[in-house]
Amino acid sequence: MRFNGRVAIVTGAGGGIGGEVAKSFSDEGAKVTVADSRADAAQSVVDEITNRGGTAIPEKLDVRSYAEIEKVIEKTLVSFGKIDILVNCAGILTIRPFDEITEELWDSILDVNAKGTFLCCKAVAKQMIRQGAGGKIVNTASVAGKIGVPFYTHYCASKFAVLGITQSLALELAKHRINVNAVCPGDVDTDMLAYEFRTHAQIRGISPEEVKKDWAARAPLGRLALPQDVAGVILFLASNAADYMTGQGLNVTGGRVTF
Image (cartoon, rainbow, N blue to C red; front, side, top):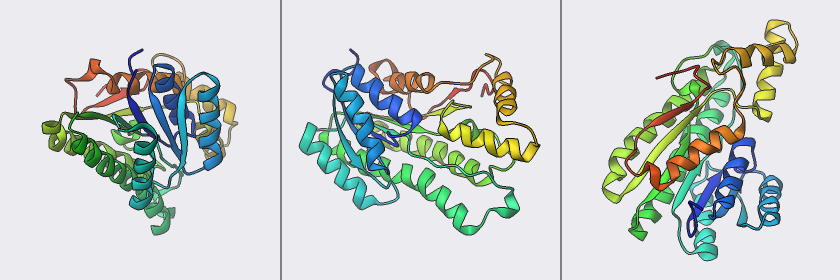
């Protein structure tokens, strides 16, 4: 078990990707803080982990609040004594033509996806530096952090920012043996993707099922990603096998994006 004796905090852990990441860490021996803005969703994942014989605690967290992040860190230290791994999965998405993106909508997306990622990295990295034993931080960017996408201007901006944060922090934190990397998922079969299917179906005047079929076909591997596909790459980046990798943004796109 790769993560015996390790402690991980996963944000957005009540969602499709975050929940799979939290459960996968637990299955491989880690103790996990399951953090999500929805307390019931966090508790549900913890219940599943506990039923599978793992150890986890639920924490309600708004990643836009540094004070709340610090409280989650404190509770993690009280429960588990240290923090070895941070995975930032918290994120939100809306789809709008650029001229319909209000300042409020822009701010809401950037606050969660970019600012939230930065604040969690800042708070946890400070704790990792105090511990003096290094650590692993994995951020969730997106294929939309590498290519522009129509109707996603605000979302793309937030995910490009996540990659910039990842690269910059990787250079600053290397001297502390803290690796900072990112994953860039493509189309992952989650509730968020179902929202995208519905929205694009309305835009194109076709059914969500037709959109789903089209999007699966645009990946050279011929299918949508599953949360497990993304979780596997995240766990690799958090493992000792990735000790000599930092500042990277790894695609999980089925071959759709290759840079």
